Length: 78
Image (cartoon, rainbow, N blue to C red; front, top):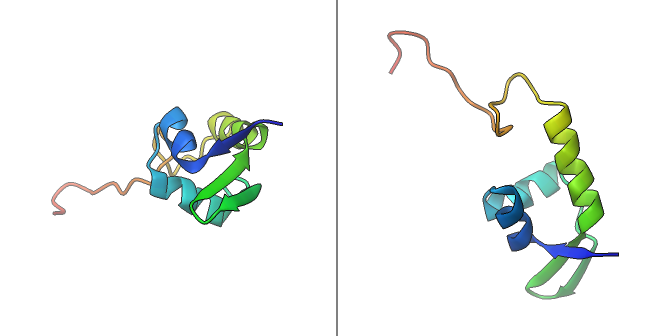
């Protein structure tokens, strides 16, 4: 089994570190596999890959191509 840290997930998938934690908290990414020390938390790399692939294969129409929520303004709005 291969493990991956939050900073490596963020770098590999070009998302922010805070987004990794947000996605883990809201169920978009799996929960961490283990906390190895106070500042070292790891995820199962295969589970993360499957979750990201699921996002890629099933895009949400309310989100942009990076699967982040976007707010569209109508003409005349500031």
